[in-house]
Length: 623
Image (cartoon, rainbow, N blue to C red; front, side, top):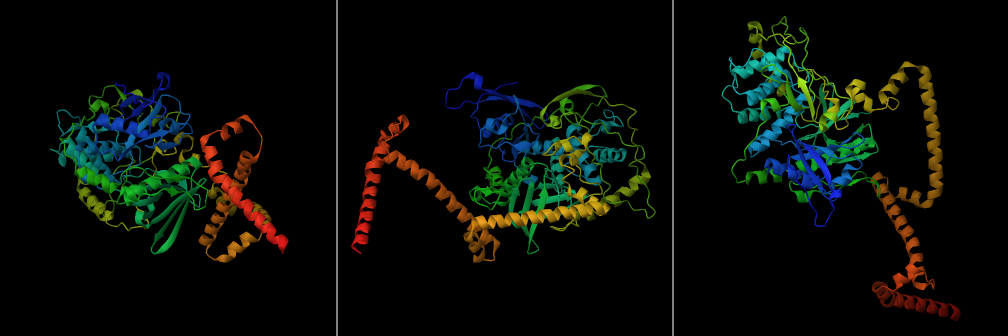
């Protein structure tokens, strides 16, 4: 493996070099040495140079801090400062950060191939929710891209069993994938199959969603995400909110509470969600700010620095640095070069393919869970009316994970995977079921047209449940999954259940609320006494809370300025007027800048002030 060293203009010793390992989309690894002042952009450029990639604005580098919180590496900040106390060598992942709204506008095949690899990961980890018909087509495209045309002599009757495409694969799904692969995709090259897969995947509701687990005001689990269209919220098997970027006016957070302020149906809408930690909330806010700037702005010059709060001297400030989607598309259309070579992963290197010969194969890949469907769990059942149920979705239950939750994202695990002939029965497609499939496809197409912008939309019969260790706040499913992120004591759902279940608890909660209200009244009374008439008068200026907040911010700013002056003016007078001959004061007085200030500015100002004072005193005595 080649090593690359990034050197800054200053001379550094070798012991200050830091080793970084970046895991790529095909699970291979790329290593390099950096220095303490190397910025994140150097690592991103290093990976793009490795691929010979020009359309690099869609991609980013992700890492996990010691608190198991995921972050995107900021390109304009030093890597060491962002990694904090992470152990060396630094482990990072090269991933798609901004999903193209229209994959057909991607100029180069190499970029489409990398996006294809990312979507394969999204499908496998449950981030891309696939209804049955869509899942079968996407799986068939992946098989066509990796195997080519179906050949009865080379491919056994159960060859799909060796592809681990979904969190759980049923016999029904594997049969449908083989049917499409044999009949509909014959003759397609790997590039064409990948393009068809991108074109079908980008129409799904969860395309491009990096799910952030949160709790709403009722305590129910929801997954927040950002797409090219806008801000989306998934709960259960429904998309309950869709706010287009033009309708989102502000994103902000305070502690563990995330706010989305927008306009829907000409009314102001404020959505409130609670994350597990303040770090997770800040990461969610930064992802929202970056996605809004990338997809909404027409030019990068329109991007502004965003504050997490309206209050002066409070909150975080962040600005997305990079080109926006429209600029990226324009730059792609101007690329004039021969198409670079696309080095596709071989069958043995693919993370979704085990072995065509059913032999053990050592692979550099994440640990996979074999598909173990029940023999009768997902079998087709004939309805009385002869119709097939719409959206028979692929089960997306979470995977089993190693002891460390984020290990799958940051370590290359070498293991043996063998396919047992007794796990699955050879798939045989019955003629009765095959006759029902056209009607199912028709129902699926009709269902796609029922989308209503901004409203609740049922996307599947299966609840949206991405793999917990792949979330921005990774957890272990074996210990409680996503709910483990949130303290049960602070869960609003638990409080509501207890409130309606036990009258004693209801009385106790009411007493606690009364004490809280009394404490709040006492605190406000004390605060009003300390603030005096100024605060009360400011609140009387206007009934608009925003104006009041602005006035309070101005007062706070004036107070800070006065405080600074009260500290700096006595210190300056001590330096200019006192005869104290301390060493550091003597050195300051001997500097040319201080002498120039003393004789050209301070002495004339002092003479003018003394003259005015003497004149005022003479007028006073004369009166």
